[in-house]
Image (cartoon, rainbow, N blue to C red; front, top):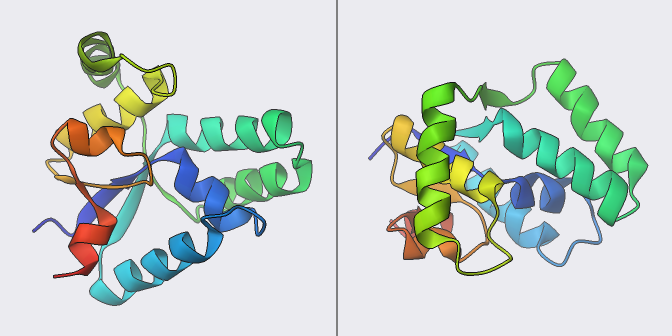
Length: 142
């Protein structure tokens, strides 16, 4: 089992936005991962996506700026996307983009997990299991 997993933007949103329906679940899983010594890695695009969603879609600028401040202070383990990862994300997106809910950003998360050789993604999006990844919920049962 890898000691690093990749997380999606929905986790940052759920952890930061107290009114998110998944806030408590995200917080509990995050605490479990910390106890297990597992590092959560965010693709830089997931941080950007979370900031944008909070500010624009959810009208939560305070929370958006909180994530940005945390990023600037080095609070997150970040994997910066290179051209190879972006191209792999494009391939994943083309093969599996059957729903308008699954974005190129989701494909970047999957491609990042592949690059880091981890099979677990911290997200509440069921699309990742369709790609063959395990969820944090499955990992926390071990």
